[in-house]
Picture 1 (cartoon, rainbow, N blue to C red):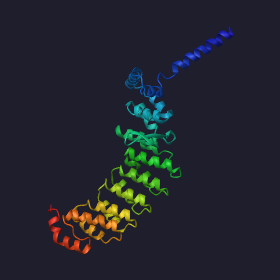
Picture 2 (picture 1 turned 180 degrees about the horizontal axis):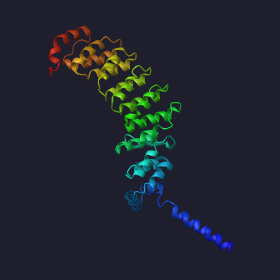
Picture 3 (picture 1 turned 90 degrees about the vertical axis):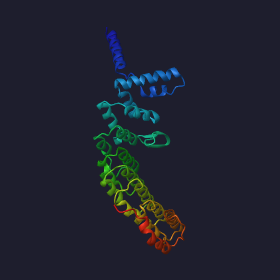
Picture 4 (picture 1 turned 90 degrees about the horizontal axis):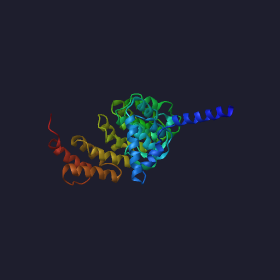
Length: 316
């Protein structure tokens, strides 16, 4: 009788385990959907469609938490398609630093890449695409501090940029003070994606950064942002930056200013000690004037004195 009872209990446990086991596995489904067999692919597509319709997001939540490589990537992409509050909460949870994984996927270009990226960037990008989540930022920055590895802080910065939440500016501003150039560059790239005066102020704060790479990133950021204040910094870079490559890049941006603002600065750049920088300014002046005067500042100053009124926009 004891043996019979034991066998009955074992059988019941097996039945319970089977009943509780997930009906679908993300890895299997994602493998099947890439099968060479068209019937297998079609069956997998129908199963996924049924899962999406039923709102059974946990299938892909498991894949997003436990899968590796492209299994994790596709699981995240599918999880983001669910609209149920519980599914949105599950997606948000993937922003936590302990859920971080390196994936072979570009979260901005949305394609496979050989370069590994922080999975939280893709999650943040999808949350932003789906209308945002006011609780996402708190999950993303929780437990992330400056003393953590540069890789984690850098990934957090990029994810904040993908989230586009202005409340992330204080974290990013603090990151611009990091001694790690990679962290500062990530913070600058993220700040570019966030609108508002606070983000611009944080960007302006790195104008004197000792890294040429950071100052170059800042100039490239100003190509996307034309708020008041950026033109002053660009002019300063063009005329006084210690790196000739930065001065040349700034001169190219000055050339895109309105003519009355650009010409005086370009004439001054003709005095630069580096030929490559002077060439940028001279070529811009030739385009503006429609004539190829000698690259000497006094010649162009006389030309500008004669033509300023003609080239200035009409008042009002």
